[in-house]
Figure 1: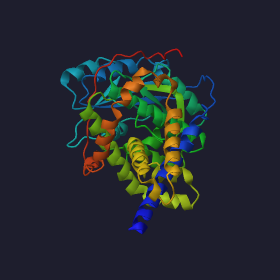
Figure 2 (figure 1 turned 180 degrees about the vertical axis):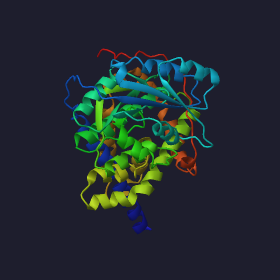
Figure 3 (figure 1 turned 60 degrees about the vertical axis):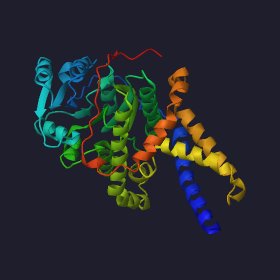
Length: 399
């Protein structure tokens, strides 16, 4: 019995050592992130902005209108709304705008299928920008992205920011995205690795993107696979913090749960699919691919890790005399994890709303923990996230 407890303690320590070390290293590295040096250019690449829209009648017209308000020469970019299951009146309004509308229909809809249909009928572009149906680009987004591509970057991820933080759930959802930006984008890029793709607000060389997409059949989490396929071609994804896109955050518990279920399922799906290649990359010295394929995906969701570490630290206090490795190591892990998260939170989130939102965290933790046991089949069907029309200003706020 003593041997079993010691083995269990060792396994838990190894796992949380990895989780804490990973989070701490990339959080600290995020403090040293620097924007790619760029200058204003008179050369303009030609962009196509794809906006796949599935039953998003409530937001897509407003999003399409705002996408035309870029401070970028209009003759150098085209907006394409990929309309899947939109209402006739919505289609009529979209066709009144100076954009292209690509109608699609599938037995089983996915983002990848929609993009493939649009790609099949379009040529003559330098780069493809992918947005979600609720995304609104800041007015200088394409200008910033163009400057980064002028430096030679073939794939550039912009910064997704919360469009709405009106209730505790949307506030926490936005906070989670902000922490991801710091750890998995600023941190990884600062250490010379590839930025984690968000699934939208990304720009990729058009021909490379088309070549990759035509070979994909992803249902959920296509961004995870696209990142790995880009890395297999030797293309790292750059991160451009100054290129902002406003992204709607979930406001209802059930929507949050469905979204996270889809994300977690896709995470482990691609971990299994690319684990072998990731391990091979490690032994070949390709740490970038190993990080994206294995290290980032093998750990539990961050909130689950934080919750489990906190519960263990409290529970083990009462049996600390029986711990083989001592109790102090658990206190150290908890302190480092807390510090890592604290330095990853942007300054603007440190408000009274943060304290209010934290009251909702225990409930979210338990729901996400239970989701781990209900992932079967989640990556085999499309789970749609409903959106709402939220008015925003596309000019960057003064800071």
